[in-house]
Image 1 (cartoon, rainbow, N blue to C red):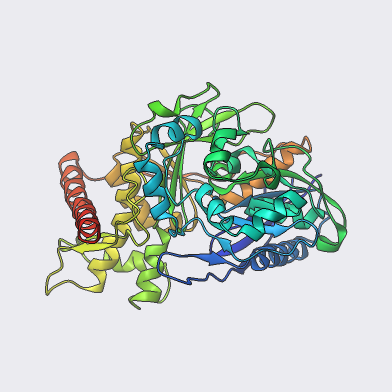
Image 2: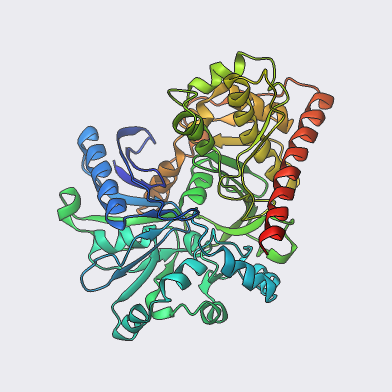
Length: 492
């Protein structure tokens, strides 16, 4: 009866679970990851922290489970980039996190040069600092690092590549889902694109081999978890969650609420035409349990759970995230307040890197309850923006920590006008990695939707009320975008 260790290296912490053959989580571990903010708009990790917290969480999970581990699956925060020395495994500087905006000016230059349509056609992505290409380019501005390429000692990769390299003693791989988020890979073939590598001056020799999401990617050395363990599953966190939910056919959709909110809608196995995607919506590679390829539409909201953290840590209005439900329920509405939490710009479908957060409708009667309710509604509104851009859904699967907030889930159903379905287990990025690893050793696991009872939230407001609230939200977003455009003009 195989037991799978899944490592989920995320933005604010590393989670690990041990899953048995029935899909039950029999052990878990978690360690926080420090973030660094050297300058406004810059977000970094120490790569050593990413590795040490993942390993520590994994050891905790194994100790809690008390079983022999047969395979490892890894999922990770996407787009975050790491550079390291192949010989010593020493990281070269800090990791540049997906939230980092330091390459905004370079992205604006690329758009002005007319590269936008071609990059969208090749990669399914829009030019934005969110993706890895300009981060790699920024790292390689150092001539000394570029010199290491000819010596064969420079390695570049996303977080799962860094973890695999350390756990195995040097294997240099990335899976298709993570490669599709770099803005350097052809989304239809999942291969490095020579023209894009040239555009961003990223040497192919420093990049990992692109592999499927299941297979044999090296053996984790015994020094890490007590015995040698094959690594058999890899996927970026959002594709892992889509696979965990069992969204494996065209039209099935899920949203994961974490630091941000990420909506993926499965497109099936037909090769997509990324240039025909809806404005602001990305095309990405979906995880599969074999060599075949599949794709998904994706929309990313940069700030979701992070807005609740702001209420707690920045404003001191709550002691813990779960307090927001009672606060929101204590008032009949937001009192006219609308919060647009564009703390690091606006993601899909707007893609405005310079937008910043706004609060509209404040009056003398505004209370902490109104603000808390407005923040939760902002998360729900942002998700509806993505669903509408993708053409709607019949039902929406949800996961991630914030999906446990019943008030938020009801608000999501009300604003969406469609049922919201929550599985019994909601921390599904790690479970998706476990499913992939299990498939890699020929021991398939059930999707999360088939384990335990689904909780379904159905809309309870009428279409007129929904339309009014959506108009209020769109007006506030328009104000945030107009402010950003005015600021651009004033400094341009």
